[in-house]
Image (cartoon, rainbow, N blue to C red; front, side, top):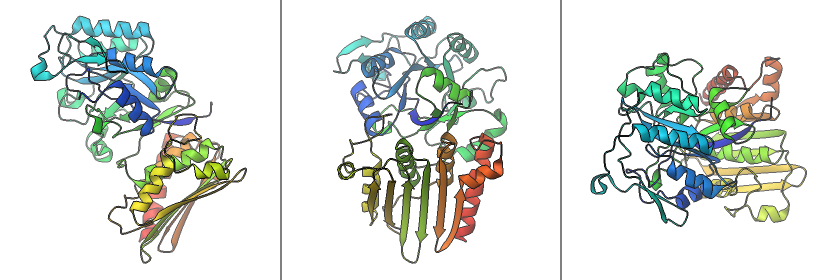
Amino acid sequence: MAELNCFRADLHNHTFLSPCGDIGMVPSFIVDSALRKGFDIIGITDHNSTIQGREIRRIVGDGEPFVLCGAEITTREEVHCIVFADGEDELDRLQRFIDDALPHVPNDEEVFGYQLAVDMNEEVIYEAPWLLISAIDRTIGEVSAFVDSIGGIFIPAHIDKRHNSLLSQLGFLPADLRFDALEISSGCDFKAFMGSYGPLFPRDVTFVRSSDAHYPEDFGRAETFFHIPHRSFAEVKKALRREDGRFVSLLLNESMNDLALHILDIIQNSISAGATMVGLSVEEDIPSDRLVIEISDNGRGMDPAQLARLADPFFTSRTTRKVGMGIPLFKQTAEQSGGGLSVTSEPGKGTVVRAVFQHSNIDRPPLGNVPNVLMLTVASNPDVDFEYRYSYNGSEYVFSTREAKEVLGDMEIGNPTVMRYLEEMIAENMNEVRK
């Protein structure tokens, strides 16, 4: 199996072309924000139109981020679905399919807003004449079948919402509906949702979490992680379908500011630096009012000049994206929480990142779901050894992937069932340590 990398994605974003899209959702903002927030893959899904997404992909070219072009289609049943197509011919066919079924209701700009596509300089290149938020005259089954016929990706959108979702409109998941994944909204309590609706879904269903951003402040408020060798339409589709070892994972119920996300970003730096061993230590010392997080690796390390540039948010050694916000944001978070951050590194030996927080500080973000983050990283880097140490007031728990692999034998540690078991085991042991 090809070596997997972990790519951060947000598949559901609107632009100024959508009548409900804010005037600030223009190509320059979307591309710059994706880079600044560290997204490797973004989807552009305006209501019933692929026009602006294609222009954004043209602007980005072979640069960053990787752009998936598609649309959010409203079906005859008023179900919202996000769909994607790969090549220009397929996108042309998708747009004709939508146009042929879209009611010719003129857009009232005073009521619904403008429907304009713009270039990188915000010059208007297209104005949609018909109201794009209308439902097209095609059923969800017909939309699914057509998208499948052009080799596209079909995802029923925000299925947890009480309006315009598969469950709100139909109340069930049709047994014959072909889909690549199901989308949950940014605010969905996934565990509670599955507790209520889980029996409706196949056991091997893939879920993605997306922002459904219509306004600048909403961009990047949700994320999905794709574990694939490289970014391409075909690889994204394989991950959604869990083919050839590719898969998708979510951070469950995580705030975008939780410390677990900082840990994930720093570990990804270690992997990018060629580390074969990564250590993570989390120490909670309540009597001393201190939380310490340390990530160490045996990667290629950094020389003094590179260390001196770490505070620059636009410096990164990554090749997957051009902006690296990990260390500067982690440092800022620690300092705002009454602590600080230090980095020690030596070329050829590795790097240690140590962040200290005042545990009781009101500005300290919650620790978050560390077991989830750890297993997400382990699964996408099976050839890297990880050791996790968790300490609470002197009591300690240690998890080692090297030991876990010995116990598992021929079973892969990236197996979804194994991942869930190990994640639950780590969480239970951390709770025992806290008692």
